[in-house]
Length: 164
Ligand SMILES: [Zn+2]
Image 1: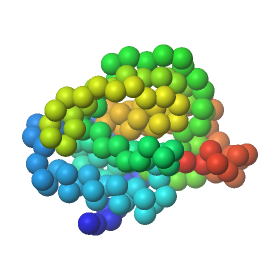
Image 2: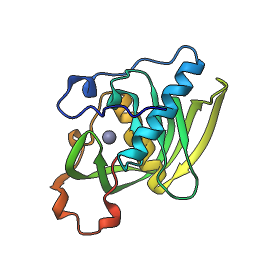
Image 3: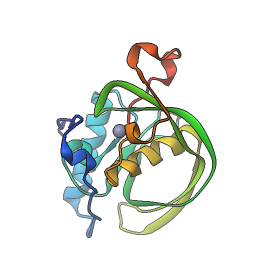
């Protein structure tokens, strides 16, 4: 495994939409392993391809809720409900957080490691993180949709200081 360098704002790769994965190869799965290791190394809860200079529709998520690692390949949000405002932070934008409106409940379609299309529902913080990652794949950063931005030291509850 390997640790990648995380691309930081304002690198234009972060605002470039990523391409669909056409074929799931052993190399792609190795890239996902490296991304997961990179995310953990950086103390993050999510990491999308463009953040490591890979413009493919892939991301890894682990919000430390006991549900473990989720690899997103070509993910799409089919449905979302119950918008709520909550904190977003990003490994590519160190020191900045933002109150961002996201769905509390989502239904997602994506491909698994075998290339099969699967659908599942997700809620709460894990749903927030998945939406943050899919935004990355569309070249969208939370800073463009946050209703309020604040610096690292203004975050009152340290438990909310999560980056993805
Ligand atoms: Zn991010």
